[in-house]
Image (cartoon, rainbow, N blue to C red):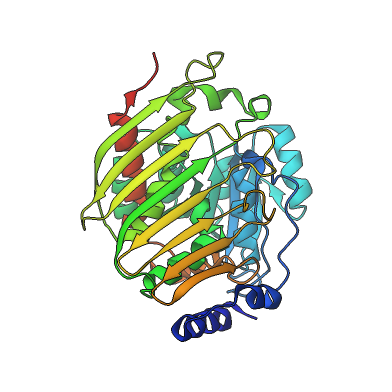
Length: 393
């Protein structure tokens, strides 16, 4: 069952007052096998079904600065949507070798300029050290290429403002891999439900983003505050993007925010806990909690959850696992005026953002995500981080 038919079927079932979750699960196409990195968020790279939106060679991309494992998810999504991965640039030989094993067709650039000087390249995707992502993006846009970076896209407000200026002047895109919505089928399904009015006007969004630290596998820069930007800037950026999307707010006030290092004194610059409360410009509220406390006994890197309250119903997303019930993720719990519904949407929704981004780059449109939205989510994370009170000494 393709995505359009699945959505139509679901909408019809909702209108009729029953969803019959078990029947829907029976019709669900088998999802891809979990990636080997399922227990480690640093290397988690979702794999979807190929769904090209362009012909071979019509959209050429390059990868650069492979400092975070999210680069594999970024490249998976783009190539599954039909992009041709032509180049890679990475100074670290081990990172380069691993990337070539996953994408053996890629050509190795001797310098970033070799990529930027290639007129065939439409877009550069990167997962550099967080503090270097803004300057790198400006360099890419100045070269006439679109840019797709891992989150968080910036560590300071001046970096954000410079990127806004360069994007406006060059007309190029500075897009961000907010993967906890864009590369999660349940979250994309919820995006559709909310936009279709399934729960009425959204009043509040609660976003919980626990992560597994797995400190021995983290690079040194991950523990340096100036380089990673702080926990609300980093993993919190996912949650602020989801708030804007689900609530329809275009801006927000930081009502309160806090950070702490509760349990990792050996890493004095690490923040292992963060929380924030926001009020959107449309009156919707948001609570965010992010942390590095996923227990060792949990089979996935984090029990990411989102709760959405509307005037006519609620949605809860259990993105990566349904704890102690099912090891699979992508569970959507919907309560509306007709009843209680459980939808297990693995393999039904797909990852349309990447195809839409490719077409946006070719057609100079903004269907996948507007530039204003991408920057505003980053701005909220930076403002929350800057305003945060420290709960520990």
